[in-house]
Image (cartoon, rainbow, N blue to C red; front, side):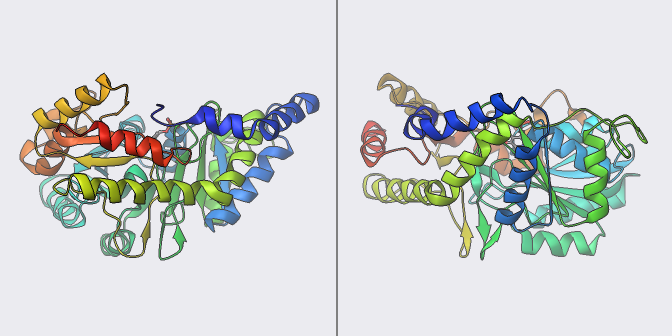
Length: 376
Ligand SMILES: *Cc1c(COP(=O)(O)O)cnc(C)c1O
C-alpha cells in the first residue's frame, strides 16, 4: 500500500499527462510561456483571488510574501508551533523573529486565544514589533480565519496564509489561499495539488503587492528581466510543471477533492466502529478539509509508536507529522521560547499518527489499515 498513491493517479490519466508534457517539449518554451499564465489564471478562478504568481516552491512563496511586506530585523512574526519547518524558517531567513504559538488539540491549527496573549506579551516585554500572523492550514483544514482576522485588525497586523497543505479546503464556501492578505501554496508532489517536482504559488487581491512579488521572483525586474530595479531572486515555476498542474487541477476539481473527503468519511466510520476511543480529525461546521493528511491521536507515545510498528509489520505505511515542535528546533534561538507555553504541541508530537490517505485510496485499503490496527 502507498502512503499517498501518486502512481495510480498517473496510470489512470497517463494519456493526458503524456500529451501535456509532449506539448511543452514540442513548443520548447521551458520557462514562462503561455502554459504558466494559463495555469495562473485557472488558479485565480478556482481560489477566487485576483492575482496568482507561481514560483519555484512553497518555501520561496512564503519568503516572497514577507519580502514584499519588507519584514525584517525587529519584526515579530507569529507562527504555529506545530507545522512544517518552512513556516518559521522563512521568518528567520528575512531577518525577523519567529514567535511560536501553541495550537488547538482538536483542529491542530494556531490557537487564537494563545496568539493574542503572545502578541500582548511581545508588546509588553520586548522591543519587537508584531507585524504578521502566519496561519497554516494544517493537514488540509483551514485555520480559524474569522477569529484571526479580528486579531490582525486589532493589532494592525497582516495575515500570511500558508496554504501548502490546504489547497481546496474552504470555510462556508470561501476557499483556502483567499484568507490571507497574501496566501501561498506548495505543489510538492505529495500536497493536495502537487506537480512532478517542486513548485509553489502566491495569491493576493492587492495589485501593488502582486506587481512587487512578480518582480521579486524574476531578479527584481522592471520593464523586463534585463531592467533590474531591486534585488530579487530567481524563483519560477517551469512550463513542464505548469502543464502537469493544469491536468492535475482539472482532476482535483472534477473528483479528487470529493474523493479524498469520501475516504475521510470511510475512515471516520470504520474507526468509530472499531476504536470509539480514538478522536477523529475534526472539521468544524462550515469547514471543508482537503485532507493532505488523515491524522489520528493516540493516548501516549508508547501506544502511538507501538501502533506504527505494528502497522509497519503488516506493510501499512504511516507517518508522524511532526516529530518535533518548532520551538525545539535548534536552527532557532531556542532560549527565546518557554517550553511551558507549548503544552498541546508537546503532547501532539508524541501522540499523532497520519494514516495512508489520498483520492485514490480504496475502501478495501482503508479496511486493511483499520483492520491492521486491530491489536492496539
Ligand atoms: C510543504 C510545506 C511548505 C513548503 O513547501 P515546499 O514546496 O516544499 O517548499 C510550507 N509550509 C507547509 C505547512 C508545508 O506543508
